[in-house]
Image 1 (cartoon, rainbow, N blue to C red):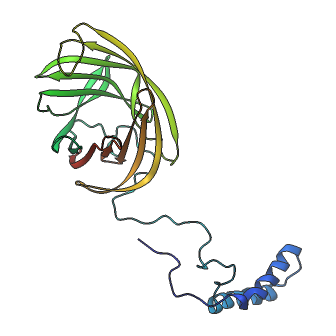
Image 2 (cartoon, rainbow, N blue to C red; image 1 turned 90 degrees about the vertical axis):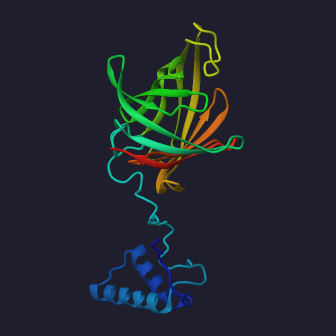
Image 3 (tube, rainbow, N blue to C red; image 1 turned 45 degrees about the horizontal axis):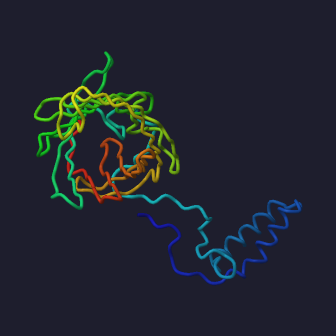
Amino acid sequence: MIAFGSGKPRPRYHVVTALCSRLKDYCSRRLPLSRTSLASALSAALTGCFCAGCVGGGAPADPYDLGVKRPEISSAGGGSLEGPLPDAGSRDSHFPLLDGATWTYHHTNLVDAPWDETDSVALGELDGNPAFVLEDEEDAQGEQTHSTHVIDGTRVYRAYKEISVADEVVVTTSYDPAFLRYDEAWITSGTSVTLDDDWTQHCLVASSASSCAPGAVKPGSTTHRYTVLDVAAEISVPAGDFTAVKIQRDNVTSPETKLFWFVAGVGKVREENPETGAVTELSSYEIP
C-alpha cells in the first residue's frame, strides 16, 4: 500500500496566514496583479508552506489532505472492475461460462463435517438456443444438480434446473422470468435491484430430493433483492487473495440473506449465509 502525506509533524501555519489572505484578497476583489507581483506572492506563499508548514489551528493535520481519499493499491489480485465491462459469461467476466471450466469449493457449516465439491461447466442448449450447464458432484446421498444458464445482455441467468439421484432425474424446475445470478453492470457500490423469478417445478420420481409426489406440478414465484456492497472487496480464500465484487442477495419471499464474492476472470470465490453460518470458499479453479 502506498501512503500519501506521510512525514514529521510541521510547525504552526500562522507564518503564511497573511500571505494566503493577501492572495485571497486579490482573487475575491479581482484586484490587478502584475506577473511580477503574482510570481513573488506565489513564491513567498509556497516557501512559507514548505518551511513553516500548514498544520495547527484550523488547518488539516496533513497539508496534502484535500478531503478526497485516494484508492489504496493492493496486492490482493487484480481489481474486479478494471477496464471496460467484460461480456457476460466471458473468460474475463465475474461469472465465466466456458466449456470445461472447473471450480473446487470447500464447504463448512455449524452442523456437518467439512466437505469439498467440484463444479464444472459444459456447453448445452435450451429451447434450441446456446446455453451452459453448471453441475456439481454427487453428494453422499447420490444427489446431483444440473443448472442451465443463459446470457442476456450484461446478465447471467439460471433458466432451468434438474436434480438427479443415482443418475435418475427426480425433479425439474423451469424459470420464466429466469433467476439472476450475476450482472456485469454491477459497478457501483450501493446499487440495488429487486427482481421476481417465476418458476414451475415438475416432480418425476418420489425421493428425498423432490419432496413431492410423482406427476405433481408446483408453480411459484420468488422475489430477490440484490445489493452491491463493495466493488473492491479484498478477500482471502484457500485459492488465493483477490479483489472482488461483494453482493448481498435477499430472498424477500422466504426471508433469507446470502453474501457472495465474485472475481473477474475467476467467478464466485466465497458464499456465506450469515444466519446459518454456512460458508463456501474456493479452493482451486481451472478456466480454459
